[in-house]
Length: 140
Image (cartoon, rainbow, N blue to C red):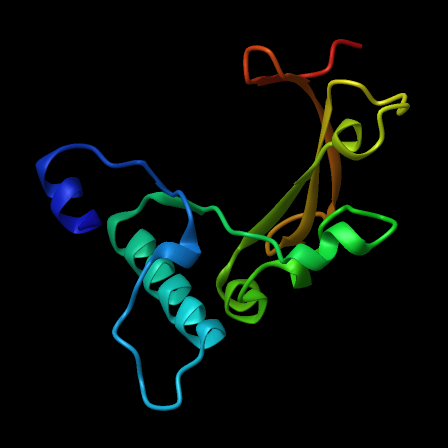
């Protein structure tokens, strides 16, 4: 599909809203993790072929909710092995305000880079305007 869109018009960026909803023809002895890995590899190949960026959004496992530190890790992605091996960048989002009403980090969205093939790992804090669903730099 990306090749068709690229031929007909410009294509610079593709967003897969929920990678676990994507389907692929199964193989013998297939499981959900290997299917997601195969889909990720196809997306990566397609992005390279048409020279565009692809961002795939993924579900995190529910066990994150049971931990004291609720910041998601790469291993918390549903089908994490397939995603981790294919992705160039994995960025996990976290808002302390969601879990802790008395936090001093109101309106702060943490972007935790847990994988970065060509750069540094770490955290970036952004301003999150919940009312307008807008993310911007934090005013210093």
